[in-house]
Length: 250
View 1 (tube, one colour):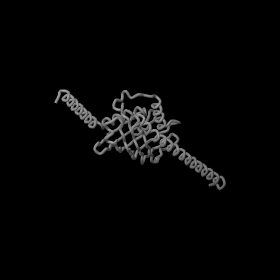
View 2 (tube, helix red, strand yellow; view 1 turned 120 degrees about the vertical axis):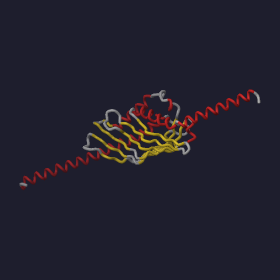
View 3 (cartoon, one colour; view 1 turned 90 degrees about the horizontal axis):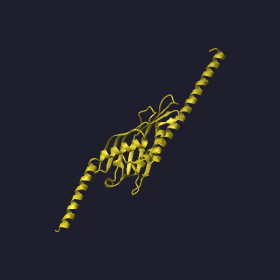
C-alpha cells in the first residue's frame, strides 16, 4: 500500500472518529441544549422571563417532553405567570437532529393554564403580543445565542388542548375562569424551508395569545352585562319596596 493511500485512510479514520465524538457530545447534551435555546429565545422574544424545569429527549424513541415551562408576566402586572405549561409532548424526526433543520411532526400541549390580567386599558397578553411584534421588527440577531445560531425548525402540527384561563380585571369584583377552545396550528416552517427558533416562537405564541385575549374580553363583557342586569334588578326591588312602604306603610 502506497504512502498516499495510507494517508487517505488515516485522514478518513480521523474524520470518522471526530464525527463520532461530535455526535456523542451532541446527543449526550441535547436535553441541555434544547432547554437553553427555549429559555433564551423565549425570554428574548417575549421580553419577559421564560423558564423550563426539564427537557427529556429520547433519540431511540424519537420523542421528547418539555416539563414545567413557565412564562412570567411582563412588568407592570401583579400575577406571577402569564402561562404555565405542565407538560409538552414532542414527536421528533430523529434523522433531522444531526442536521441544520430539526423536524417535529407533532407537538401536543395539554392542560395549559393561562392568566389574563387587565389594568385600565392595558392587558398582560396584549403586552406580550406587542413585545413579540417589537422583536419581529427590530431585526435583532442571535450572535449571542450560539446554540440556536444555525438551527432551523419545522413543526408540522401543534395542538393546544384542554387549556384554561384565569381572568383578572379591575372592572370585575372577582376573577373568572374560562375554558379555551382547542387550537391546531400547522406548517410552522416546511421541510427544506424551516424557520428560526425566534420565528417559530412568534408563529406559535401569537395565535394563542390573540385567541386567549379575545376569549377573556368576551367573558368580561358578558359578566359586566350580567352585573348590570343584577344591579337593575336590585334597584327595581328597592324601588318596589319603597313604593309598598309609602302605599301600605310596611
